[in-house]
Length: 386
Image (cartoon, rainbow, N blue to C red; front, top):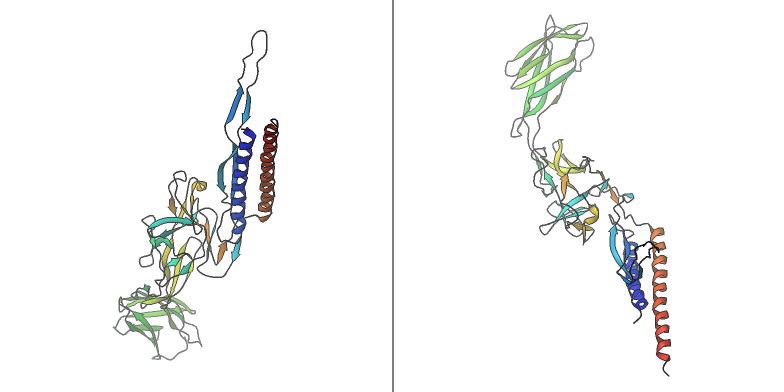
């Protein structure tokens, strides 16, 4: 049978694969995080009809004569170039600007994806549309310890910001220099113990002949003295275990604005909202006014990303040629940054794909013509005996 017949068949098969890959690329033109693929061809074995001859003293050398036996698919390569950004404004939509993958868990299996269209499930976990759970490190009292084993991330509304006892308070404003001796100003602010119980911090300002005395309700006191309105003595007071900073108090005439304007304690609070920083840290805003880290998502990179195996649902799994995953944080060396409120779209180039369609179609037609031509030749041979 003619070798060209089988060469044409191999060409049909290879160009059909190219059509399949191109069709899949076009089908996923609007798939978030999708990476396009391309087909690479190579020739198959060649049949040696005449071997090479070495040159001799009386004649030159001769080249080998070989007849190729067709074409085959050498590989299907994934293009991991960055896709375009699409702003969504949704807090749980995340985009990797640069290299790296999100780490997700599906039924106990660790997978990797570039698609950042996450949502919150009933347990407050960040999940992909197919239910894969985003992985990272959970914060303890607002501190994230990266580098250890990763786990499922949760931003449940039941998360609690612990109470913090008040240790410092700050007083600012002006006490009037023209107040009569014996004049009294009372100021108060709520402070908290380690359990979040609120009590009052009371300060009494009493005008003296030389300035103002400041006293707490436990009897602790200090004297404030001023020169041309600037504080020159008595800049701090410790009362009820709280260090009160009085260094910002002034003593000018005709104005009474002194107040206890801040303290560093707080009651316990529940999570009200969250945002994702560029380094992947999930910052929670709590009902007690605290803003602290809830968790930090884990990023993965590979020595050979092209060696990853597609697992469906826009996810990849480790293969023998991808290398082991290296985990890290967004923005670190080798890892891209996180852009919240945006999605990375497909990197499919439609103009290139439609060109590939034409190339694949013409290649298929040309190989089909090889088969029909070979068939005509065979028909002529059959017709020789009539």
